Image (cartoon, rainbow, N blue to C red; front, side):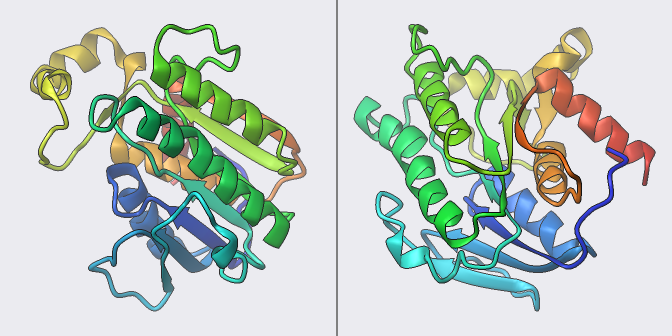
Length: 234
């Protein structure tokens, strides 16, 4: 990704208590082009940093109270989400669709020039025809965000996100994938992405200082290419 970044940008991270969001926040705090990183969280972080502005906000169904914190921002990285099966279908739709749309509405009003980097998922279906609720909901959120008016919108559709650090896996499928990860990565390299690499790519595109406009969708293969470009130009 040989693209110049903004100078001393102000970045918002949503979902910093989660896996990808946590890496995104850490990377943003270390990034020389980031002047400040505002973490919008539902519970307090165990992090202290001069660049960090922590805002506790528990109800993402109503983000009106965030208007001031979101004012004057250059970009946002939205990683808030839930695993299928971990919550009810109604709650999954609320978290997957309603939360990002409401947050994006307030962000765009407060900082109309901000870029938006959104964590979607492989198989997201904006047509609404998929039999998988997660795919329909992610597709619905994507469609709404593309119509929200952001000058630069980046949609990330990762496949299996490798956790990197040990954690309690949310279900059997994730435990299995973690166990066979080395072989799975070798056989299907474009179906996996490291959580830290994904977070890094999401932050870097939000920091781009370019004249591009509109929405871009990055499938897992594209995300890997972004990461490889980052490593090449270090």
